[in-house]
Image (cartoon, rainbow, N blue to C red):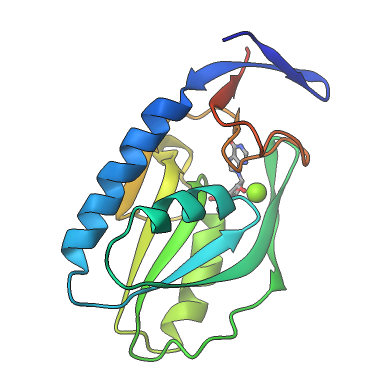
Length: 178
Ligand code: IMP
Ligand code: MG
């Protein structure tokens, strides 16, 4: 696969769509087992998670509901340091099993802002399923429960992740060229 340019930056291919599909199937298998007989509510974090969320729930065989919230913390290739809620949670999640679905857990700031809001509504359980986990970039103590890939601390695009609005539609994952 060739390098691609998005805005002013060059990206090179990192993880293929085929490998991604494999890992999503693995994770869905774990969730099917862990939630057998339950009916979790998946909460996707927009915008980034929409592709992973769509792929993941189509690989689930348990009964599942899905909803979305829209949170934003990122500008360009670094975090802005604050989390804005653009679309908030409308469902009654009291007593529900919640699976939060993220595109990537990076500093952990988004999750550390959102989790208290979720717990405040007294769900039965809360787990985090993320397409990508960047543990070495963590500034907040957030642990993920299901991660398709652990990646190094660099900037990636594709599969829902963007660089200033572009690149979300790429089926493969690309990494910023040094
Ligand atoms: P956190 O709050 O620092 O964990 O980062 C959360 C959000 O930042 C993610 O949901 C992404 O939207 C965005 N983000 C973090 N790392 C990347 C990246 O490498 N590429 C694109 N977006 C990213
Ligand atoms: Mg984002």
